[in-house]
Amino acid sequence: MGKVIFWLVVFFAFLLVLRLVNVAKQKRNRPAEPPPPGRLPETMVRCHDCGVYLPREEAQATLRGFRCRDGQCETRKSRTH
Ligand SMILES: [Zn+2]
Image (cartoon, rainbow, N blue to C red; front, side, top):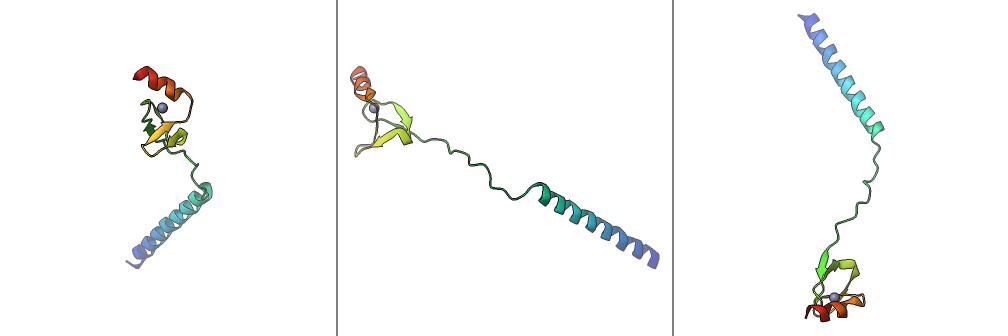
């Protein structure tokens, strides 16, 4: 009976060592590096003058809302209205 317990202990010790080795390997293979800086999807806003949708970064914030910064805004505005 003592022999069985001895082998059980050896078996579990072996499993424990295998597990430790695996963890160590994974840590070595995957060093803690920051994730690549993924760009957030751009927020689209609507120009209150001509109704064109454009990225938030390219829009100009006004009191009434957002507006396109390019000179085409007036052209589009006169075309749609
Ligand atoms: Zn516009």
